[in-house]
Amino acid sequence: MNGLDPRRPVAVVVARDGRLPVGADEAVAEAGGQVVLVGSGTVDAARSLLAAERAWCRETGAGLRPAAMSGALVPLLAGVPLVVMPSSPDGRDLGPRLAARLGVSFIGHAVSVCAGTGPAGHGVRAEVSRLDDRILLPVTVDGPAVATLVPGSRTVVPASRPSWWEPEVIAPSVAASAGAPGTPPDPEVIDVLKPDPSTMDLADASRVVAGGAGLAADASDHRARATFELLTRVAGAMGASAGATRVATDAGWIGYERQIGTTGVAVDPELYIAFGVSGATQHVGGLGAPRHVVSVNTDPASPMTAMADLGLVTDGPGLLVELARRFGIAVPAGVAPDPAGGSS
Image 1: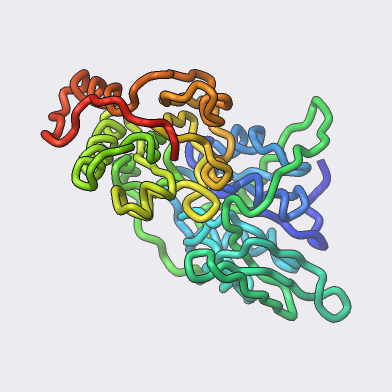
Image 2: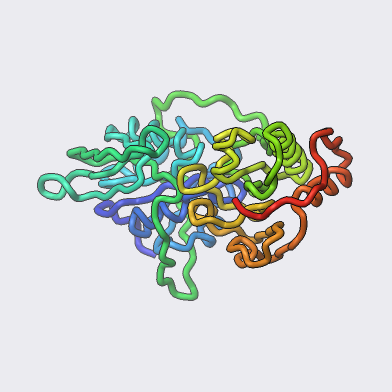
């Protein structure tokens, strides 16, 4: 494989134990197919990228050391017109530091970004999302830039690659985890603890259990809140994070940070279980490509059931209560296994 082309944009993606952050493939596609992966399990992560035409990997160990990592990436990325990173927690942490080390502009929370727009082809143009995605602002910089891309911003077309395609491992001399001289020190990583599914960033969850309006149809506001509280506890017992449709968050049954969809959080879990979710376009637009989908709905013809690997045509609240009992979770007095509708 030839070396990185410094005249073209490059994506930088942080992998953890071979797992890609949400929006990784979109960042690679926005950069035109070139990607550098750092972190742990980078080779396996690179192989799972659909949009990668050329990939370079460097193992930097568990835990993110953004100061050292940004300094170490400077020799590799110096002169590149545009660096694109997914707007994941690691991307939001590393991106500004990398821009500072490179001495270039930083564009955060972009929904589109492209290079070669200024005088003599030097410059970057982007659209950035503000006010909870209600406003898109155009941004133009005269020189190179580092940008973080919001997951769910674009579609991904798989790259054409030969059957023998493999990512290239970068030599330690090119991107060592120790960083360059003068790099501000990072905290020492003693251990990396797994996050609590009930409080972790929903975008990073590998398992998601979501509820829609069908989970609380014809229920009082008090009972609906109790039902979604039970959903959160059952999800935690399954090692999953709780999510919801916009109807549920607008009603106040669960926090807005749990909303999945084009106006909420974009997710891409291994397992997605939907209770009373009809599968409206706005919601499905934020789902990514879950590996396994389970739909619990009274409507066998709902879009969510149609796209599911397993469709359970049954009473959602009743099944939720039964799961809680199986996990030894106390069922709130206001929640009963009465039949509920299936819309969201």
